Figure 1 (cartoon, rainbow, N blue to C red):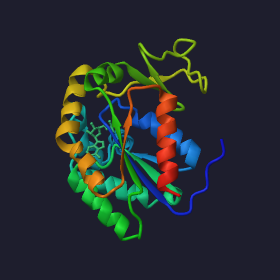
Figure 2 (spheres, protein in one colour):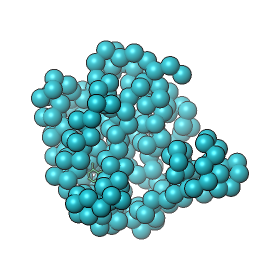
Figure 3 (tube, protein in one colour):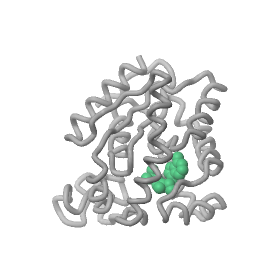
Length: 227
Ligand code: AMP
């Protein structure tokens, strides 16, 4: 599908607990609107894998399912936002996660004459998230997502999309850590729903249904917010 034309850089935020489908939906919006998905979780995992100073400081917190400090996350995000490919706009997946991060993002955008166009809260049933997250894995080559119970590739171990044969699982996608991650979401991130509601940019989407229907709701929101 052809990317839709947008007049100014768009900043979209996806809020929701682990397993709500932020990454999946962000990838679909990326294709549709030509935006760049920016996941602070991915950036942090890359920093851990590269053994950078920030990565070494973040590793234990991530393994325990807690939140990495605002200072580290903001530094990583600012570096990424300075790269040229994000000029058309970004879908923030997993950021902001605290009020401090949300306020810092507002300041950062204000300095460049931008603002948050839309924040979407993906609303899900917490109890279902543990099963969703604990069974998920992705193709190491293209990032296509799979699940032990809900979505297996047609040929076991081979990616339907690109034919890759290496699959990977996140170290923190296990039942124990998901509990901590859900708690961190409710304590520190869920208050951002009110933060963006007060600014008039919040939408809520029931994210327990079929992926295509959720994607359609999100596309409508993004199209309206960036018109
Ligand atoms: P995610 O891939 O979004 O599920 O993030 C994986 C882990 O990275 C989280 O459980 C946190 O430990 C850390 N993380 C990702 N994004 C943030 C953020 N914006 N603020 C703090 N910690 C984060």
